[in-house]
Length: 353
Image (cartoon, rainbow, N blue to C red; front, side):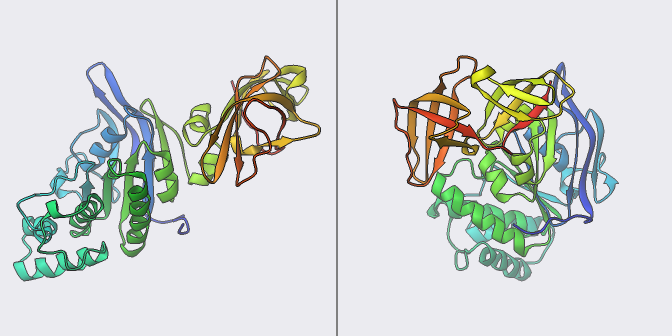
């Protein structure tokens, strides 16, 4: 991943943006910025306000309150076609009667660029997305991934400052989606603009982003680099939505958090609250033969190629089912067996209620 763009100019700024549809609040006081040259993702579950936020940036929706700024200026009265942005939709909307090249040229033609210059630039951007020589083909003759690249070239050819993506990879199969992720990162390295990527797919967001914002019920719960959000989630929702986690109730006594009573696990933590919630990632729990934090029966086991996932029913009734992930070929405990489990000392993340 490229280095962060600390100190770079903010191309997009959302300041306490709110969007209401009658009695329904779709976006509730959202604030973040997108810096020049940054790949920024907005991630959250379906219906949380992601696409509405994108539409306010693009100008197809206006905020009920708050401010959207583009290049430092209030964009409230700027229509979509005059904003220095472009959209790549989930549904590609390529013109089937036009060639690939004419699809890419469409925005240039609308901008008044003459024919020879349009073709030259279209072929330049088709080469950028690894479709050199495809100018005269029809979109219907292309694979899904190739059509996606045509849509990307069409959006890039006008060289917007900010390229907006609305779930563009969601219809692709897993292997093709991973290939397109790699290509998107490589293309982003070669262009000067910023990418703003809206998705419910946490894996895509973490793979692609310099920074990301996690949206829940119209509110931003956390903004930061993917590794920070994964390792230091700000809320139980973020911990549970970004990756997999185990959430436990904990009790704080004299600077020690205890989870699961006398037969559970404990760790030092100076909390102001008496009751806390604790997040532990599945890969941060080890299978051990001696001195376990808790014991439990493996009630389900899922082989996933590079890792094996266990669902463990702890012997201690006050502990919920626990998910444990072991990497590689090692399978130290089988389904139906009882094993010992230890939480890595630096793994727990505490949320004070």
